[in-house]
Amino acid sequence: MGSEQLPFTNFGMNGAYYSLMVISHFLMESFRKDVVSDIIATRCYATRLRREIIDIAVKIVRTGHRIILKTTRAVWELLDVKNLWERCNSPAMIC
Image 1 (cartoon, rainbow, N blue to C red):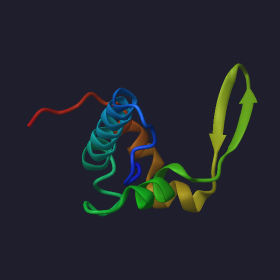
Image 2 (tube, rainbow, N blue to C red):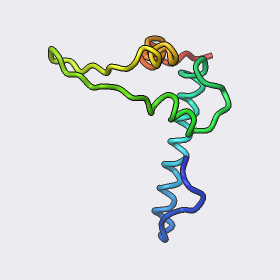
Image 3 (cartoon, one colour):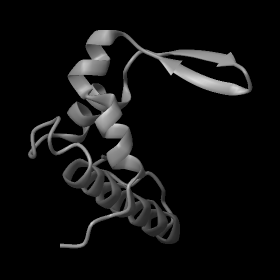
Image 4 (cartoon, rainbow, N blue to C red):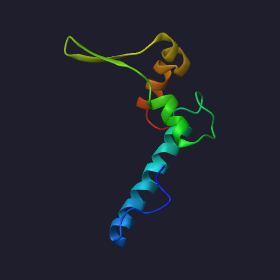
């Protein structure tokens, strides 16, 4: 997540960029451990998580003032989307 070189010449902008990279890394790790730990391996790169969970093909359908995301049955069963959706919407459990 991110790059090895900071993109700006100004120290302040590089500091903000680095801070956003740290926050996004923390959010990705939290999502991976709390939500998708049953679906994907505990230790994986961010690109694998993105390819398997986020980059899936869906069809967006609007009917009856609702937006529906349709996907194939194979993706639905492989990712266990219903369980994944419930885990995303449940409050965090403190251990």
